Image (cartoon, rainbow, N blue to C red; front, side):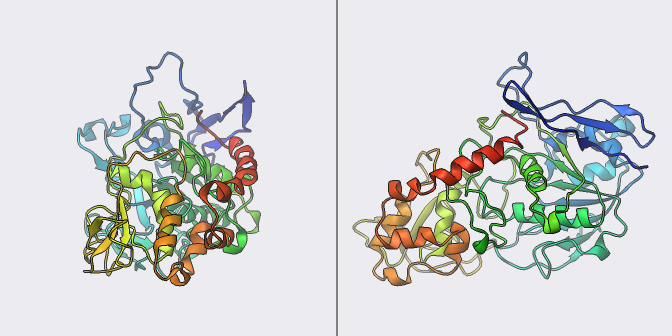
Length: 424
């Protein structure tokens, strides 16, 4: 009988959720357990965060002699490859992609599954991708952002275990969460264990935004959570399971390889750009607030050198918006809003992001647009996850009044969230 690294029952100790993980080899011999994620009091708070992928010894035994599928993109990098005892000669001081590491370790990777932006992370936002062959590895790459967003049964028949290793940025409308959902669902339906290699959430230090209403569920938001939910992708996976959000309430056989030296307050600079239009720490920090502009006539800076660090349009008044930029079509930003036109707006490159969503920029841009009746498009409701926010702005509500309507939902979500936290 197959035995996999699985969650035991979650327990509370001194008010802190502890996830205890136990592992067994194929022969039934116990491996060192993945320790709970509570920081060791002897550890220095300045110790570098260690992503799950870097802890090869914790999961390599689960992949040996198995046919492995991997959900990955350009962020699936081991910055410091420490090989297992199996292939000690394969050590490298250079960063290596997870696929290359697994193959160096003798793991039989049979197929790659790629999210939005593709396996190499170069495709435009929203660009549908086709299945193909990766030139570097000659592995088949199945698109999870094309004809189907869910792994198809015929692509899972020769897979014994699936690995998920993708960097998230902590905003509900970032589509990697939806990819995770459908991967979990497909694995549950085909009885395939899923191993999630956890990575830090750079926006995990706060929780804010309206709770998604299921009537507005889409690939930019499937679950009833706020815009900023304050969880790592591993924690979020346990919540998907625990809350019964998968189709027919199936449960995925889930393993989380947790981070080391991490709390939700730990600052973290992403070593790899998670998608073409989030190239900097500043853009990632501002993304939860500025992405609302994607559902309006205003540009969030796509097609410039500073996407999600500036916003503006060709219709905003120059006197009030003296900063200007010109969006150009290019890699990762084909046919941006206001292509080749001068936009007046605001430069936020040096702004200090607050630990909350900023609605003031959106509200003011709406007020200053010469045709407010055409300001919002249908996509805005999907980004907001509800119909109320657009109506509130149109009715002249200020930020404080709008946010007051989120309070009860946020408090209820925090209670749910607490059940699935691995880190303090």
